[in-house]
Each structure stands twice: as C-alpha cells, then as structure tokens.
Image: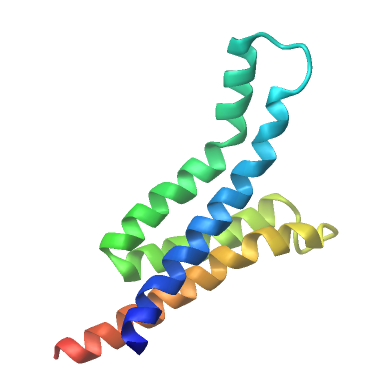
Length: 116
C-alpha cells in the first residue's frame, strides 16, 4: 500500500500543478478579441504547461528521467521568473514540480530496490 501511495502522489501533485498553471490562461477569454486571437493567446499562455505535461508523460514511463526533468523544470522556471532575486511567488508555483520530481526519484529508487 505504501508503495502504491508513493506511486500516485507525484503524479497527482504534477497534474494539479499543471492545472493550476493552466488556470492563468483563462484571462485570454476576456476582452473584445476575435476567437482566433483568443485561441492564440490561450495556446501561447499554456506552452509551459504543455512542456510540463510532456515531462509528466516521460516521468510516467521512466521515473528517474522524469524526476530529473521535473527538477530541472522547477529550477529553470524559478530562474526565468526571477524566483531567487525578487519574485518569491514564482517559487510557490515551481515548488510542486520540484516536489513531484523528488518523489518520482524516490519511488524509482524504492521500486528498483524491490526488483533486485
């Protein structure tokens, strides 16, 4: 049961964090824009979420690689959004991805130890 819980927690954390990121793109549907402009805005705002979704798909299949990619994504997002030099709110947005990455790596290590 513990291993099953450790299997699902990083996946659920990553999915919820991706959905949280996608909420910010809903502001594209306000204002007097055409439908094409709204869809373009929506897709552009969701590019980071799509990248993280691809990382989640990788992590689902290869946990160690996905965990490392999640940690790199969290670090990259924190640096790009100046989380370490004046924008601590970006660290709050990136923290779930770091947690998911660590949990993917931990689960990979525990499951690799059981297979031997």
